[in-house]
Length: 639
Ligand code: ME8
Image (cartoon, rainbow, N blue to C red):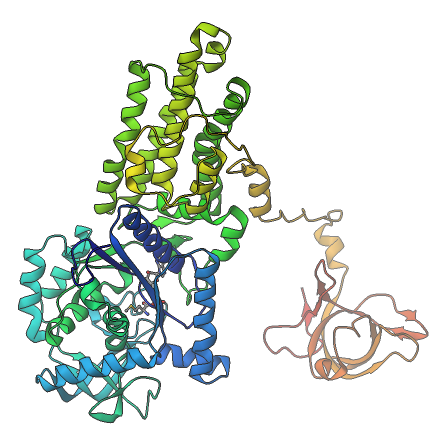
């Protein structure tokens, strides 16, 4: 471990701290899993690594959600932050720190930073009017609106005129622009760097950093004016710093900071945060890494749109390693990706069950049959054996480079390409044929041992993505459960000969795609059953009229019947109808309904019915009486 005062070799990665206005969904799970994978990779590589996540608990949006839930904000945030934490815990997310912005220690650091910036003269009091989006918790420009609504939501902004404290953000615009221009890797991928540079080409204005306590009481009071609370973004962004300060880790991990966010919050992280850091005299972060959206039905998955998918449901169904594999493999960092459950199932079957799981299964089977289940020694390596070895031993550096370049999907694919090569190698070398010839025993040993090494190396490199399955794979090969390092993927002799293998359950059970498709398909509506056709003359024999309900009482002798007195023009009629379970007399009196007026009168349990009320009935027996969508005089004919 490096000297604590030495920031070199250290790697500090953060997720956004999520709003606690609703439970976590796939989008939150993605960023959190991603940072979990990235930090596991850095640990594998031997970096001094720290992973921070947490929850953003102040602001108008959270206060509104608490009010809607009918509880005070603190009770509410305690509840929802618990949901985030327990979701991450049950998904095996290995965070080092979990920050809540309601932690007293965080509040104190926010107040210290504010005071420092205030004392330096970069905060002033003024009046402002602008368009505010509560969903995004920030003022937006007209340009940012999409069809008059806030970005990523269907809500219009609110016009706000308020006296607040302002941070002189505009003052730092030239500095920020130059800094981003001089550091091509600061904000990445490049499209988001360009997005921020485009914002900085025009005035960014000063940032309103307080809210009157009288209107928004839920927040951190300004240290010099208790009548104002801190604007939620000014409070939230400081979490990345305040946590380290609280833990005494800032010298060890700052500024080796890698923020991971989605593209929705580029402006606060790419504009507000660097200028805040500069004003507070804190060094700038190392990288802002921005990913795209997971889309459901081609729209951003979000709490407010209600198309959010619960991560726990899926990881339960497919296992958390397969779920992580899918999320990392199916999104190219920086671009949007479509979320379809069938996509997880296809990945499980093709990459995990077919390519990787099957290679392990076949290898263990052959070891059982040909070597008594024991890992054999290498014989002399031929060109094919060397080619396989070289393909695998080149992976550690290749994957490491991919991680540095944020190409996580490519990193995984590099490993899977090698795994497919190993499958082809088995097919080409035909160990089953070698096993028949005692003269080929050494060659058989080489082939089987090569595949064991290939599986072991693959398991090391895939461990950050699939920690449980990687260890399970090595356990089935009989290898000790020692923590892996990247160097384990740089050697071709990591599985000692003579080790007894321990075959177990298939690593990745196949998903029955047909059953999944059937379960996901909407049940087809049964066809309508039509009666015999009638002619217009047949139809003309029926007389429908508007009837005005005057009086309703239960049938004296039948549970399900009501007796209605209706007026049909000059006539008053009695109609017996089987709608008692669906309507109270009060719901019917005064209604204008449609009746069949020329139906031959019949006696129903002793009461004569002089017509029939029309009603619609669904397959479950729910019933609605046919009424008219505008007033018509009773007696009017319906055709
Ligand atoms: O913005 N696809 O919190 P938030 C991918 N509290 N990622 C998604 C996503 C999607 N469809 N939806 C959400 C906030 N995310 C602030 C952050 S940080 C100082 C304060 C992920 O709960 C992604 O990481 O709205 C995105 O940036 C974040 O959730 C927004 O979470």
